Amino acid sequence: MGAERALTRRLASFFGSGPGVRIGIGDDAAVVDARGEQIVLCCDPVVQGVHFLASAPLSLVGKKAVNRNLSDLAAMGATPDWLLVSLLLPRALTAAKLQALLRGIRAAARAGGARVIGGDVANTPGPLVVTVTACGHLDTERAMTRAGARPGDTIHVSGPLGGSEAGHHLRFCPELAVGRWLVRQPQVHAAIDVSDGLLLDLDTLLRESGAPGAEIDIERLPLRPAARRLAGGDLNKARQRALGDGEDYVLLWTQAAGPLARGGPLPLRARQPIGRVVERRGLWLVDGAGRRRVQPLGYQHRSG
Image 1: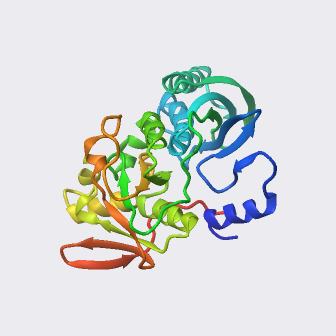
Image 2 (image 1 turned 30 degrees about the vertical axis):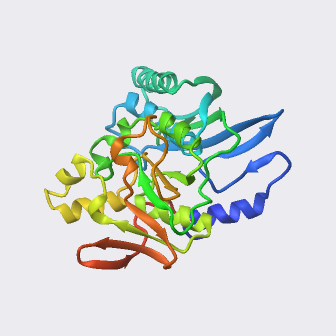
């Protein structure tokens, strides 16, 4: 049936929209009007064998299940409030391991300022699956979305990239404070969290914005030390990891050229652009050797 993004577009067409829906299927989260307030909703699972190995500590699995969703809220500029948790538990899962999983969920919820208020539990002969639905709110009139990038915008990321498999994919913290600050900056035009890979998520943002293309200054990519380590010290391989490894859970955004407001939680390095949105169609890497076009790198779930 094609890749995940094609399925998402079909789902948006199939289910449509309706009264009170400000942002529907296709962004990091949905935004709805509820009695005069803008409520932000998202839902993501973590599946053993897909998002974590069976050997992973279940306290970290619980944290990841929550933090994946809080990262989506961060990309919209939202504040978390409530969580629903659905657990599909293998029959062989021990009480001690279940307790570790629950402790991780509770710890991540508390750290993000949210509270678990319900959900469901069932047994399964298959792998462990933890699905979290997050509900938050906006303190601003607008939400950041994947639509809005335009040629001339600069491209930024809030943190280093690559090598997430070395442990970052379980230990990351959602950039909630950064998201709430960015949404208040009128120069910020579009945003997404980097979960599937920098190039793939940037390509998604461009498509949703109707923007032709983008250039990335590969020498400006902030590299996580694990990217260098897993690349055996090879800088080019480390940069390839930064472009496509995914599960970085930093924020990627575009903004009108020029500085944002002083202060705030944004790291100094994140104020320096890694590229720009351009009129030239496609994704391009730029370095001292020139410019070359590349395909979107990253992870896509299959839909069939």
